[in-house]
Length: 578
Image (cartoon, rainbow, N blue to C red; front, top):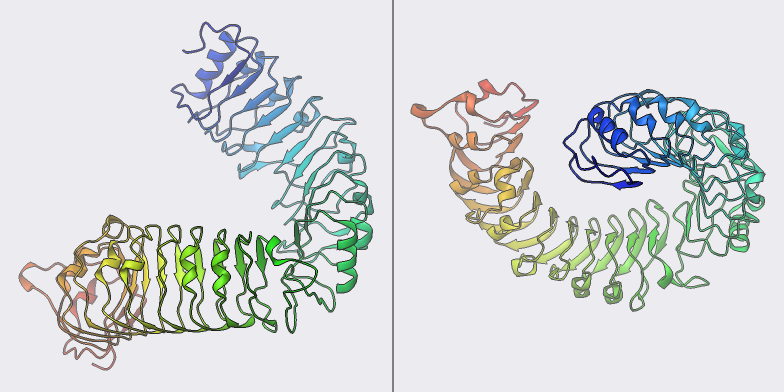
């Protein structure tokens, strides 16, 4: 083995290196060859099997990092014998059983992470006085009151567990920077002693625990945050707040000058009236973008689901830092400003179900960082602009507007990461460009309820993703497509759902071709002039895809389709009006 003669080695880092030995062999090799080892870091090395007690001979070990290996055993009790241990990280190792509490009594232990071991059980012990623990992650049960003894504690992360009872005092944890107890079953009030933790930068008591909504309450937010001048992130989602909206604003603005993130939704206060774009709850009736806060400083704005909130978008400054804009289901209206192109960092625009009107600005092509664009359910009109510069975009939804014109594929050919294109319920016309099917990752295409005409496109250059992946959903229903379906449609072997209903398609639809579409679960050919055909001499019902939804309405069928005999997974069948 590599380490056989390295008797003076004190630190061994092999993270990400494929190790051939089993866990037991590794333990024997290391313990017999490197007696003075202090740091053992072998995360994601594909190790498997138990860790032998021979590893316990390495009394100098101070750091053990074995994340992402398949250890598949209880946490070895001999870890408690490493008196010099400062770091123990066994994240995602498929550990099970009960965690030995004695490990917490190691006098030098600063960092312990056992997260992503969903079969590992245990509870927190009473902590010793003047312990060295700085980082604690992923435990269950009651939080011991003795946690206040941890004067060296820097980070406490216990989000998303099943912690119960009240929040203890952290009065002795003077050095703590991060406290995250979000999404648990904690109840009672937030103790005022937390306001004395002057080094605190992140505080998260968000509480959406399914058995205990709004279980945590704050005595008085002003008293809680009064001394937390270093706080940069405050999360109190679902926490009962006693102040009125105006009092809340004064408490935050006067006490936390460096605050970067404020999350308190849904807020349980009265008359939450704000005139800045900072908040996203209970806002009415009109938002003013002017005032004390400059829009250029924001990276994230979410005002979604305030259905009584009115307003319009302002002119955006050059090189603004905004990355996320969410205005879904508000009453925002007016034109989309051309200056939205100034927001070069913008990655997400979700403004669906608002009242915006007019053209989509051509400057949107400047959004090189754009990943997700949703403008559905507005009153936008005119042609679809070029997205040629948005090479990172994954999702585009412009449905339910009044957009007109054709799809110019030259505006789309660079969108190699595009996976979902939804342009339904507009007034788009012309041909459906066959070149859409050449985009390598596009799997969801919805062009339904438009004015597209001409024949179904001959598909000649299909991406390998559509040929092999069981993902493609294609909806061209409610258009004016006409003529026969090309046989090349059966080359889309990744088809999961195909809806061609309510067109003027004619000619034969060969059922024999369906055996090539083995992932097809939903098929709708209704309201066309197609007739179903198959070759009786070379036909096997067992080779058909197993569909769950099949609609063959108004196709002038004369007999019950025999291929339905093999559709054991069929959940919805509509062959009416035949």
